[in-house]
Image (cartoon, rainbow, N blue to C red):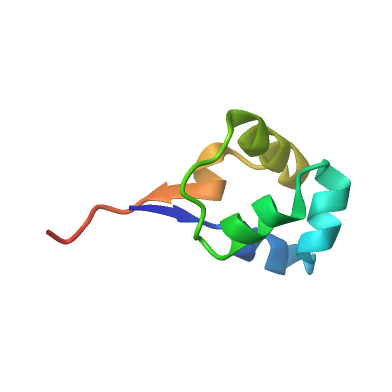
Length: 69
């Protein structure tokens, strides 16, 4: 399973989805899906914009968590 830490990054900076969308140029719906961890796919351009905006690495934004099967 892939976990997205966008909500944590946004919380640390006290940002709303609409603010992140406006400042990154990404669609608000994209931010919301990542925030709620309901996105099923993410464009590399989106990851690039978020990592640039938050000044973080991909591994700070996403984490692989092995399934317990």
